[in-house]
Image (tube, rainbow, N blue to C red; front, side, top):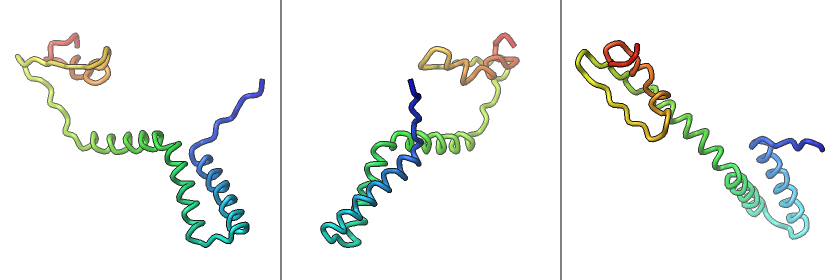
Length: 112
């Protein structure tokens, strides 16, 4: 069985643009369409590409902007003697992924 190669999003964009340019040129030659109408065909192609790949673009931009916001956050100070640490996590193992170092820090009551 032959393996199917998946196209990257930029390859889909290039393929759709070439397809719509080809369709636009065929319509222009057949119907005599103007430049404005060809531009609208290209914009429609971009709209279709964005509809198909929008979730991937949103996810990558969201991760990029979230990482930039997180870098600006101040570091959380370690709890002092006699202070307690409460970690609320919505999913199992989230407290380990997010606050394991702080939980294990000396003075926080952890095993460290």
